[in-house]
Length: 113
Length: 114
Image 1 (cartoon, rainbow over the protein chains, first blue to last red):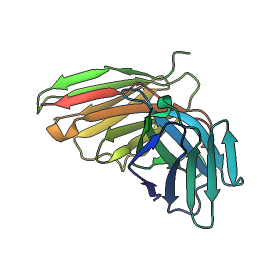
Image 2: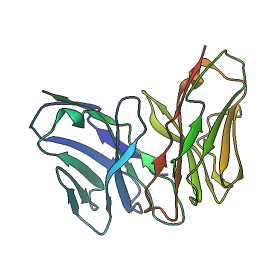
Image 3: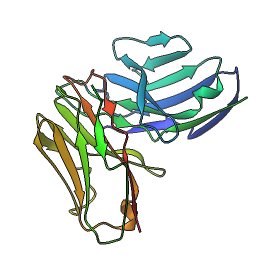
């Protein structure tokens, strides 16, 4: 089955700096890669996703990149703010039928003011 | 829509007791997933249903765990007997249509087994 590795497990950045979180996946058939943000004590919520027919996607201060050949994808947050502090999860799935998302173990991002 | 609704929010029980977690998916969603979250293992998929039918329960850790979905609007996850290592946050999530659709999580149940 699919296996998703995520790095780093913790990340501290100064407010205004950029943050990058990287994930690798094992199943070359995976074609959908969402990112979820979980604030302390809250539920995970989707912040951005990318499909395998696209190499990059951007939404304001966040962007995702995908390298299908290398089977890795990344989340980039620019101009970080204290409210970006949270745990971020990457995930992967195969869009056939209703296969489930397989999540990475998460990255705890701390933005220091 | 109120979103995915889970109950209880918190459950404290003693080792050996039966625990039942409940979930109401978003109306119209045809897939339901149970995840367990721990610091060590992150978000682990326990079981998922499509159109109320269990598809894959290979993530259920032991026979002590069971899940049902008797209709499109209700699912339960039962642990019997519970053990301290079952302590975790259990999330229910639902999704409409195919895999590209957004996955919506419930608020989770924080389970503590003493």
